[in-house]
Image (cartoon, helix red, strand yellow):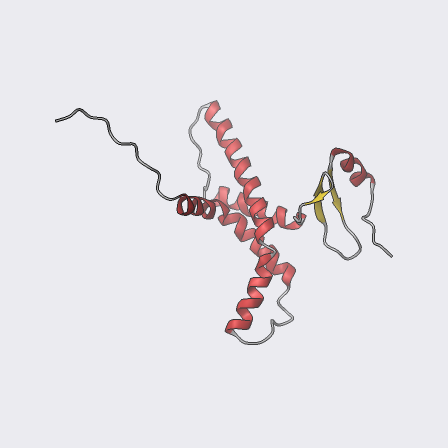
Length: 159
């Protein structure tokens, strides 16, 4: 017997727009856009988004540029982009945290991971912290992978 995604009025209406959120039995919900499963879990997206908001509010990761109307609008769009990007990074990276914890636990403590270590809780906590530190991490990786930029030679007269 095949399990079919639950169809409600909300998913049927959003299906017409191309975005669905389907669950099948005990499976975790995933986000589907235009019939393609993205593999993103909504709870990890939301937790990464909250982590990005904490970073912007408490750590001032996206500082304001000025007091003019144009600067405030530009800052608002930058903050929206950072929150969206951080939540995407968190949703993609957080499911790897339980696997990394299990591998580290087996290597360091030699044995199986105890039953009290819940993989959903570990993934949720990892999504929050990845959301908090996604912007500094991505900026560091961009500088590291991008290398040093070439500096244009100065133009001067012959001495």
